[in-house]
Image 1 (cartoon, rainbow, N blue to C red):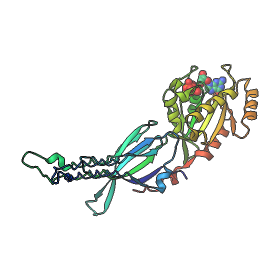
Image 2 (image 1 turned 90 degrees about the vertical axis):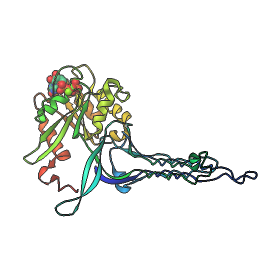
Image 3 (image 1 turned 135 degrees about the horizontal axis):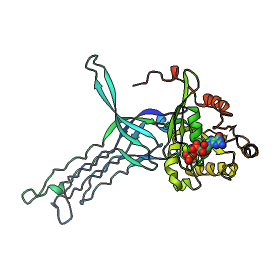
Image 4 (image 1 turned 30 degrees about the vertical axis):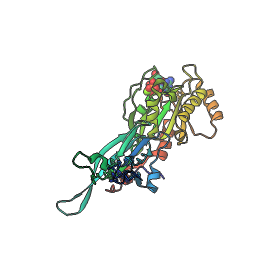
Length: 352
Ligand SMILES: Nc1nc2c(ncn2[C@@H]2O[C@H](COP(=O)(O)OP(=O)(O)OP(=O)(O)O)[C@@H](O)[C@H]2O)c(=O)[nH]1
Ligand SMILES: [Mg+2]
């Protein structure tokens, strides 16, 4: 089940009340006020976890709660604050706050979604609901003329609310591979997108999305992602930025230069890129993938394609020449099966 949007309820912890305690000792039966402050309530914190790609766990548990702060104590001791509770969400989670309003015409209650946060950076944190502050103990209210104050302030309620979480993918399928493998050429041949194509690495610096029309009603989206190099998982060659985009694609198409035009071995290239992907995120490595062996118009390609088939026996391989169009129809038919959506029946009326 791919859950990519749902509603949750979140409530941060309430602050503990201040204490109105008076000191009572063996020799000081009427000691002064010594009530301490209440502890703070815990925040509800969201953490962007690059190793997950689903909001599924909130489907089963849509209540996000943090504990309350403890009441203030005697002897001017502050009550214990409740720890923040951290909830993990995938990269690309968009959060809206849900407010309810009466429809002036029908009197019906309608929900409104206000954009609240767009969480796209791995390990980014965001406080969804702030915990309430603890109240003040009576020790703060003592003055020269008011020696036995019974006043204290109550703890403040934690923030609460209903929220809509939505996982935004950038595309149904992403083209992943070494620089110069021909990713942008493939996108330009399959869609109306016109990415820059050139014979030098890192031509593409931002992902570009194209729409593939499989037939009158069926389509899917394809993202051209900047090239990855060895060490990308350690952020070499802007690796993290690019891997973050890959996280937002549901299916991965690994493109290799099967012509070996730069004197590299496509099998090694593919092993390298697969390794970078799995070092970045084991979840990403488990996503559906196939191989596009590009540049088969080059003479050396035949042998390289054989080697790829030997090495990756259980993976679908599409030998193509994006430049000449060879093999592109077969690839397109496969993508239609994998990611094609019938637009007429795709979006039943969104639940409000
Ligand atoms: N011979 C041959 N050359 C191709 C083919 N597809 C692409 N090329 C060439 O390979 C070079 C790189 O192509 P791009 O599409 O820019 O490659 P890319 O993977 O997007 O590269 P980056 O954006 O740098 O990661 C260009 O000179 C293309 O003309 C092909 O099927 N056959
Ligand atoms: Mg490119």
